[in-house]
Length: 325
Image (cartoon, rainbow, N blue to C red):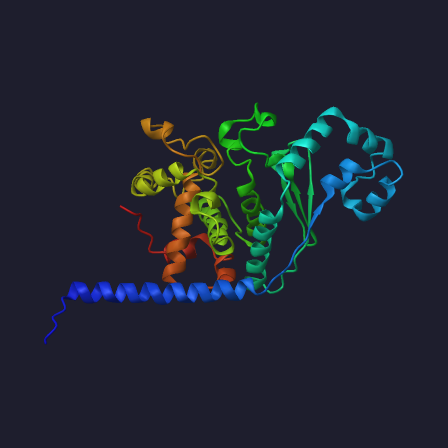
C-alpha cells in the first residue's frame, strides 16, 4: 500500500509535534518550579490590630514596629482602632477574606517563580493590613516585607468605592492582588536608564508585562494587564491599526509629555482623538510594548534577567515586530 502525503499535511504534522514537545517542556518546567515550595505564611496584621487591647498594644508594636510610625502615640492607635470607619473596614475585610488559602497559593506560586529565575530572591514576610482605601499604595514591597492593603480588594462594586472612577475600581478585586504584587517585583528587577520617548515608555511597560507572563502563567493575559476580556479582545483585534497610528503620526520617538497620559497611564480609554476612543481600553501603548518585547524574546536567545536591562533600541531593533492583522 502506498501513502501519499502533501506538503501541507507534513507541515501540519510538524507543527503539531512542535506544539506537543513545547507543552511537555513547559509542563516539566512548571513542575520543577512548583517543587521549589517557598511555603509562605500570610501574617494577618489587619486582624491582630482589629483585636488589640491597650494591654497588648506594646506587644503588637514590638512584633510590627514598621507598622507604627513613632510620631503617633498609643492613644492615637487605640482611637483609630475603634474609629467607626475603621471598624467598618475591619468588618468588610473580615467578611470578604474568610478563606485566604487560594490567594496564599497564588503568592507562593509567584515566589516559586521568582526564586527559580532569580536565585538570590529571598521570600519576604507577607503582611496584610487596611489603609483607608489608599488604593495608590495598596501594595508595598521591600527586601524583607511585602505589605498588602486588603481594603483595596473588596470587589469593584463595593460600596466603599462609590466615588472612585470605574476604570480604576475595576481592578479592586481579589484576582488582581497577586498581579499587583508581581508588578511591584517587576519594577524592582527592571532597569531602563531613559524614558524620554513614547517608545521608551512602551518598552518599559512591555518588560513589566512580559515579567508577569513568566511569573504568573496561571493568570490570563487580560488579568496581567488589568483588562476585561472584552478589552483584551479589542486590543488584539485592533493591534495592526494601533501600530499604524503610532507609526504614521511619528509618535514612537516623540518626547511629547502628553503621550504617556494618552497611551500608557491607566485611563478609561486611549486618546487617539478619533471616534474609536470611546470603544478603546486605556494603556494601549503598554499593550503594544508588551507585544514588541514578546517578539524580541521569540527572536533572540536572551534570558529574562538579560532582557530586563536591555535598552529600548536593542529590544526594538531586534524584535522584528509585526502586528497581528
